Image 1 (cartoon, rainbow, N blue to C red):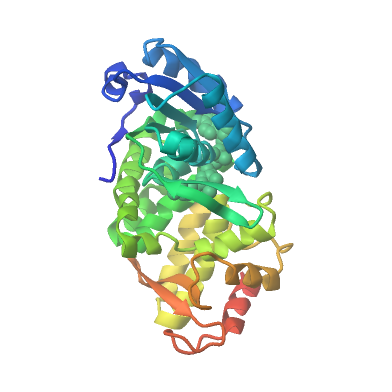
Image 2 (cartoon, rainbow, N blue to C red):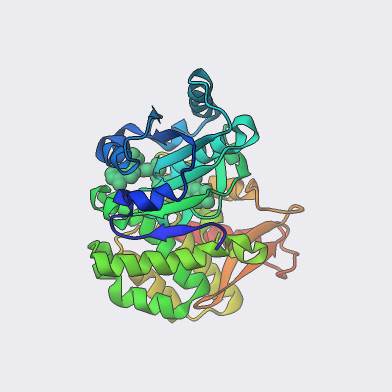
Length: 352
Ligand SMILES: NC(=O)c1ccc[n+]([C@@H]2O[C@H](COP(=O)([O-])OP(=O)(O)OC[C@H]3O[C@@H](n4cnc5c(N)ncnc54)[C@H](O)[C@@H]3O)[C@@H](O)[C@H]2O)c1
């Protein structure tokens, strides 16, 4: 494990657990108005009502900016917080990304704890210490690696999560099965209806399995394959101005596109592609791009992806169920992958 991860129903109410991470720290909590209304008072009670200050930042990806980061830092300064401060991020991936970045940068770094409250943040965003804000130049373009002292996950908080946000998180859970573990994918096929209905037992099992795989973020060559579906997905998010598709929805469509290319390049069986589409349908995730997003613009945005190297397009493809590889594709069609003309990629986008 990169950092301790505690996952348990009622961990949000477990004072002894939090005591382990709070020595003589002063505490600042960063959250958003929606999450704080639901869970801030519980957290304060769990912290045994130690003195602490809460900073509420505006909700939404459009606020994951340097201006909001500065709002957090201004609060830290104005209340005279020093390096003996523990920052606690209470919220989804947006809150953990920006609060973690504030912890990484305030006085060259203070300790922090993440309490992720969305499925996406529990299985992905809060794991591995990747913190960031967006810049007009691109998503997550300013950031730092800063490991939290602990990630404390209470699956019960997912009960209040809006349906669409919840399903968006399921896309990342499905991704883990596709890239790492065919058995887990098969388990998900059987249990997707229960997971989608937020059955506590099924959901806990899915979250725990996903976290074990998400932890692979530590290992560089394994980290790369976590981007399965993301190059297509980020490009669609970017072209839509981050307001048409949620992250997980874009990743779901991106996974269909990447799997379709995998059929053409690696001979991934059509039956696997059909299984991917079926499980995404059971999770009520979209399979095709909104027609308002033009294939030409998506391809253009893909060319700008920060994971590309030396003018090659970097995509994660499937060789088989549970086995992913990184493929560098030269835009001229002459790369380590042999001839994959960009037109072939554009055709897949057009048809999906
Ligand atoms: N650092 C990483 O490794 C990493 C990985 C994946 C995604 N991310 C980032 O995560 C962000 C997306 O995170 P997200 O999908 O969690 O969305 P989010 O943080 O924007 O939260 C979505 C909405 O759900 C609400 N919400 C959160 N928890 C709730 C709960 N328990 N009950 C009711 N409402 C709740 C929030 O107030 C917000 O309105 C993006 O900024 C993305 O870049 C980071």
